[in-house]
Length: 120
Image 1 (cartoon, helix red, strand yellow):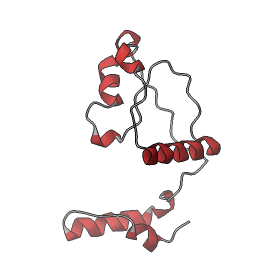
Image 2: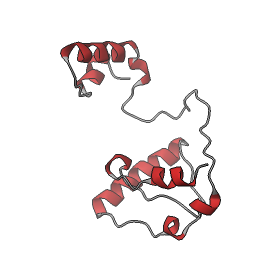
Image 3: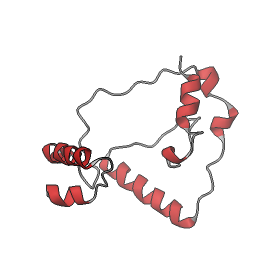
Image 4: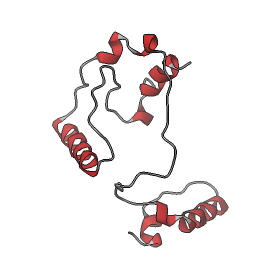
């Protein structure tokens, strides 16, 4: 595990100096929950359940072929997926409908849009 100082050096804080100090103090207090690697142990939280209306989710646009990625991005995705599979954090999906792999925060038309439309 990293030291609190090394971990805090990786975080970019914004806001007033007082807010930044408060955020740093909070991160120091709970620094043991931060890490630079995925842990194989699950979080101690209840599993998230998403109820969907299958007639709105199981649509042709949710069965499209994977998006094209550069060779570098494909390799990065594959490396991350393989590591998470090996840790047992994720498992192979047999889903017939899916969202594309992409940075969710950069695209408004993400899985969350489709899920919010398909959720009651």
